[in-house]
Every structure is written in C-alpha cells, then in structure tokens.
Amino acid sequence: MTLHEILKDARLVGPGNTTFDASNLKDKYVGIYFSASWCQPCKAFTPQLIQMYSKLKIADGKPFEIVFVSADRSQEAFDSYFGQMPWFAVDFQDGNARSTLSSAIGVEGIPKLALFDTEGRLITGEGRRLVMDDPMGDSFPWTQ
Image (cartoon, rainbow, N blue to C red; front, side, top):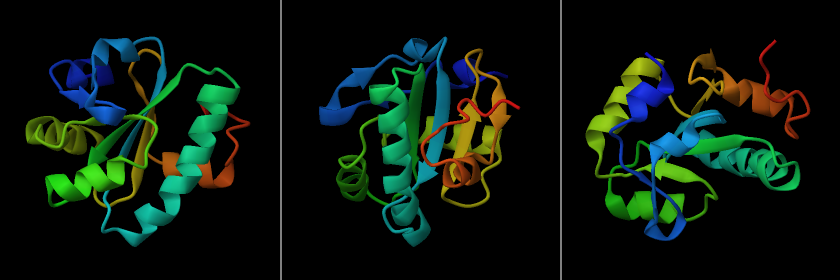
C-alpha cells in the first residue's frame, strides 16, 4: 500500500487551520513526522527538521512536504506544538488516520520520520537519522 492510498481519506490541516487535500502530495517526496509536545527528543529534533525543510522547500524549491502526525494527548497540546511547524498535519481529531499511519509505518517510538518517494513508496523509516547526519539536506532525497 502506498502513502497516497493510506492518506486518501485523511483530514489534513495546515497552518491557521487551513485544509489540505492529500492528493496534492503526489509527485512530491513526503516525510511523515511522528512527534509530540511532551517528548523531549522530539522537541530537540523538530527545530532541526524545520531548518532542513525550510532549506529544501523554500530556498531550493525541492518537491518536498512534511506531514505531522501527533501523539499529543489533547487538542490544545497539538495546537500549541503544531503552531510552531511550517508544514501540514493529520487533523488531531482524525484518530483513525493517525492510527493507520502509525501501524502502516511500524512506529514503535517517537520522534520518527518516515520518508516516501514521489510514487508514495517508503524510502526509509530512519529519516530522523538521515536529517541528523545531513542537516542541510545535501543528499536529498536520500534514495541511495
């Protein structure tokens, strides 16, 4: 099953509570970022991911998106944490999509960054390590 198939019915939101159609992720590399505001390693990694995303997407114009999947315990915690991020998220209220993504990717702990190619196929579930080893994304899309 591809990422596009998994996300086809998911409710995605953007900054300012805008909605986002998952079909817009086609033909883009996608990072699925599992994280939570209560997780200290997540809070340390998120700024690094924002920096790399900003360079790749904004400065370099790469076809790259990130979708945040929250493990927060409340809507308020999700809203506060997601408010710091420049990308999209699975709506906190869409627990089914969050659970389906977590199961499909095999999330056992957070932070977790899974990277998908432009066809929606998994490149790696070890995206966090790749970002930490290549913080400016010089080797993007890390397919080798």
